[in-house]
Length: 295
Image 1 (cartoon, one colour):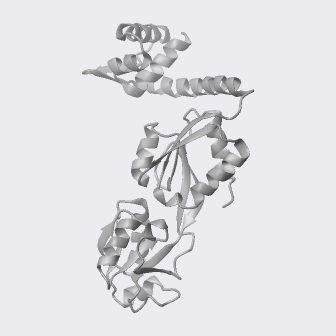
Image 2 (cartoon, helix red, strand yellow):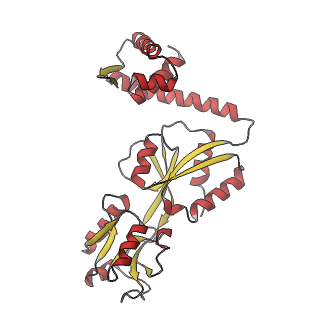
Image 3 (cartoon, one colour):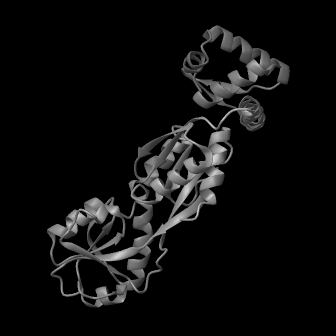
């Protein structure tokens, strides 16, 4: 058994396709096939089962994969650190992010980070909604993501870094718009038409639980604050239940009224990363700095 076989195995286990794996490894398919055959012969167990043009891991293959990933990640990390011992912190980090952290939090974080570690690191930002961002993080498109907390995501770490408030969004001419604060129970008693997030989104599921407790029902739904604000703007008698973010800034006809019976830190935004993924020194330093950043 040698390192090449283990790297070949890790790639084939991820792609589950000999042609694609050989292409990514820049080797002939026959080289890959022979390497895997020799590895299986040495271990004495089948690692892959053919399924048409693809392969899938056997029970033994899945168990072996966990050990290989852990071992190669440790080795890659050691090599990376050895190379960077005498160098400035450099490299590239791809980060997926919900757009609502880009108005003040993310610029403040990046300014503080560069003040501590210099300008050698290149950060690429990719904007999206929470669920697609987490899917792309799982596929290794990004090393990190700023997104809402989502339950039942094994292998992912969610570290809360900031929170957002839920507000009532109303037209300036609405009878309740002059109030300093409102409650969900008041909105239920006045039978105001409610517009909020789709329940399929993480924030929509959170708001749906509050609405059910208060006896509220929505008449329309949106994916984000911009779409939600546009819907409220078009329905002068409606009330939006929305996060108080930069997405509401374009709507000068609307006002955001705090909700007295909803915690101010209602919706946490997290730094998210895969627990077992290989992390360069730059990524590890960024995680450490971000989790300790006070904003």
